[in-house]
Image (tube, rainbow, N blue to C red):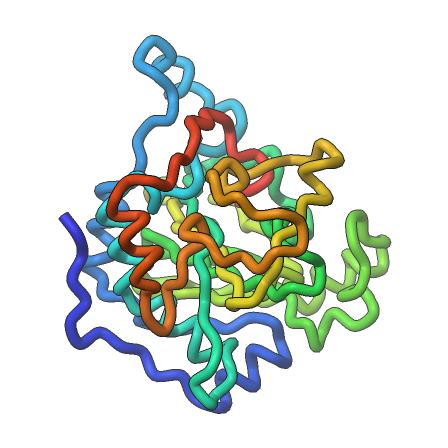
Length: 306
């Protein structure tokens, strides 16, 4: 059953827009109703493997430090689709990143959910990184904006499970580096990183080049496992890039949608639908008719473990 968002709107100020440009991220408190957050956690994907492999799937979180989740949840869930198509988050993204003259659109690149069991450190996190490979199908010059929304309350001092995030203004020359950072850069990140307390309904918006890492959940934490819903957005006009795909790089499930785009094409496809300021009628008809043709892709989302 789809979600309803009548009257739900978060106002963004000029000061917050300026902060996003300066820091590369923005924390927005109370952007989503708590009852919606609870419902999305309750209705989260529970399994990506077929029934004979359930015991293995139940054991893996304690081995690799993360639950298994498939991305592009919205393609198979009316509830999650209604969240991205009619909820407050796309409007929040548009208000922050698009020109204030009302021009431009926002497209949904993909969504996914990551869970970290309490007392475990995911094998692919704990180090500073950018989400560059999350945007492996857009050209380097195209913008990318991520939304991270915790589905549980997070107290970083008592329980852990938050994010360490570095302001672009504080990163200095290290902001331009890619891959492995020097010891001096790591020391700089550790010194200036911010870590926030989160309540259900809070949202973090950050650019594809923002430097961050996960905070492990304490082994003695009196808390539940940490789940977060994540989405990647691109402005309309972003262009499709096949460089990593052709080089045999890591491919997200979003690459498997039958979009028919060639290298350099604008990402005008219902596989990456417009979600702000209004849905595209032709794309909506295509999606409602079940013609997305996403292929089965049962795999561990290693590159997205937070």
